[in-house]
Length: 468
Image 1 (cartoon, rainbow, N blue to C red):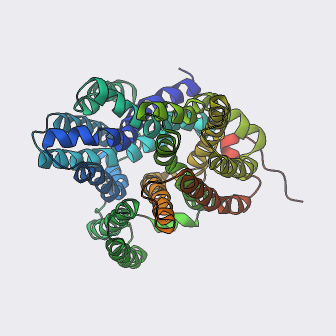
Image 2: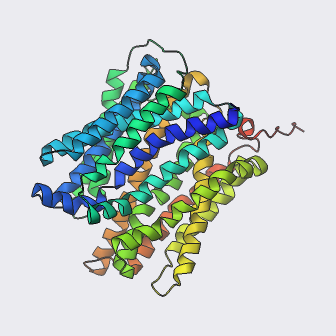
Image 3: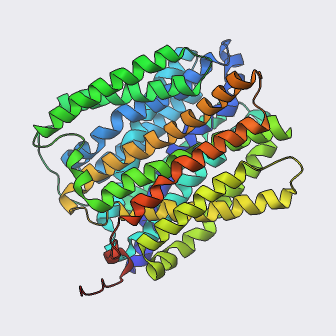
């Protein structure tokens, strides 16, 4: 089997796990009213089912790298798929709300191990020359998950029981476990080192309060004082962790990775980018429903256009990056993506549907290219011995950036409602949110411009120009 074909096969196997994890973060959003009726609870109270999953993910992701090193990445990945699949079944058969929340917490734990460890397996199994193609195959299903989730949830609730939202994970999980068992060999040696329990607890508390604060911020009907307290506690525990990490030989989150320029740029600039596009699956359907009068299913299908074009970019991103280089692509594409968010602010009901689809398809094309560029260059200069720490760190940042994007968009809508006195967001309020997200993504252009011309040359195969 050729190395390129092997890279694609491994990437698709890992991508099935990434798709499940991303899908489960959003698929229940449209099913909350049906779930509330089933458990005789208020729909707003049911949002805890989403929050519990996100909090569990945030707390457990930092531990994934050290656990993979200790027990072997392949074993941990297989166990994580089993845990995620079994907890999906537990969610589907949950007899009451408490059982559902408990199952969602366990599901988040499985997802926290599954995604970063799966990415670690891919990076250790694939040659650097094949990483761009492999990451494109990996990231495309992951981008589909958040966009497909809401319309799929609405479709399932409309024609079947909400419990099928979790049951659809069973065949994917079983197939994924079998494919990992037969086609992926163990990569990397196990490292018997002491697990950083203290660091994990401190970082877990920092992330717990940070994500909790974002959830309060996103639900602008909750007291903002709760958000301020949560964020303050997150800063305190974050400061304590930084002190701990400086004096620990092997911290659970290795902050020294930020000294690697390509990793630093991918984390910081990538976060600014993901804040804007992490809000898109939340903001665009809401605007189409409240501002255009679309049904949930109609708005979901329109939003899906941003993901559909990513399938085309999957086959082209490698050629574009190899021809133009990372620095050029990241700078100009960051501008294109910011422009796309700004154009979304101009959407109005009198726009031709074809024009809206054209914008979303084009924007999704460039969005996919930027995701692939950030996702692959992050590990370009990481030493193989530190790869597990890098995947844990980057996976945590990616998860937080998406939550931050939704919180920022919801906060802008809340501020606009307060300022205007409206009870329901209007088109101008959504336009303001899109423009804020576009503005937040622009500093990424400057950060990408700090990269040297030859950044990522081992991935693209372009030989750096000799010094003059």
